[in-house]
Length: 403
Image (cartoon, rainbow, N blue to C red):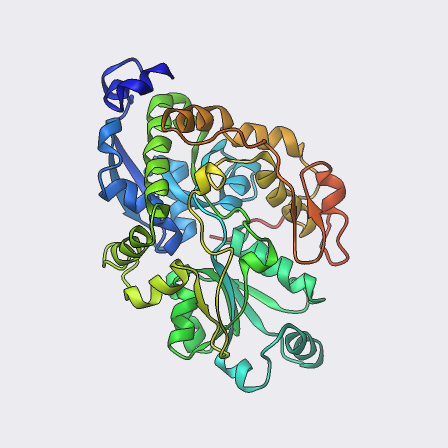
């Protein structure tokens, strides 16, 4: 990595030159695609010999299909989507996958409808009472069967004594369609990334009952995902891509002005296609829940944190597998650590981070306490998966993600 003192052009012209210069990069219309959009449009990729062609996708299932087929080279992706495809429970044939870096932490929300709010269901306790006393099941939407939003929804409901697979119904809705589904009365609540939860609040279509960071402060969320074949065929390209997105991530967090200008950029038709007024407040950590409460969130959407956000921790990948096991998506325990080591490309990430002056000293495993008091540190994943009062541990065939 000693070429870095010569600047980015050393990578373009030397032996580390990208094998492939034009990259098709998938993303979903969510605020946390920011670092990918900034890298592609604000001059962060060209110094590394890359042209990033942004490809917005209509749903996570579409993104999955194009990533696996090779139509997309890499993508802004759900942690749980990459692992599900790798493990063969992602709705397509098992495909070896790779996580190149974390793109963000925090910043997702669980909203309930205006109808529930009017019925007095405006707290976790009131929701628990309603679910267990009402004859009709509530319907909640998430964005992909093994995705982060499904896991946050399930974890939060279970922490309140509500079994997410028995006490309520769950459906899959693409993020940009959540507000319309809520407005039409097809769903009673949802878990989704911004700006769609904020948009529902602003349109008086409901309120935010919980944030994902209240479940797990600084939780893993979106990743830069690709197939293992892509990394092995184009290792220099993959490394350069991580470098460019790290630079963009650092830029976003360098000043409030940069964050604000990024929110404005995202509002454009080709990205989120929604007013900046829906994006900017929560992007800046300014939350209003629709119940009259407003706060500056200490664990708002993070993109960099001097690399703390971006390292693909082994324990982060393992956590999603423990939840797949907990909810019956995996019928037996995988070799949690071995699978995480296959998927998380720590070697490539650390090379890229070192090259752009981003700290790489963080450990491969991190320890966190979630809202139910449980500590997750990656030390006993099989035991952790079995430790929950509410679960769907199963030895029957796995439930495959539906297209």
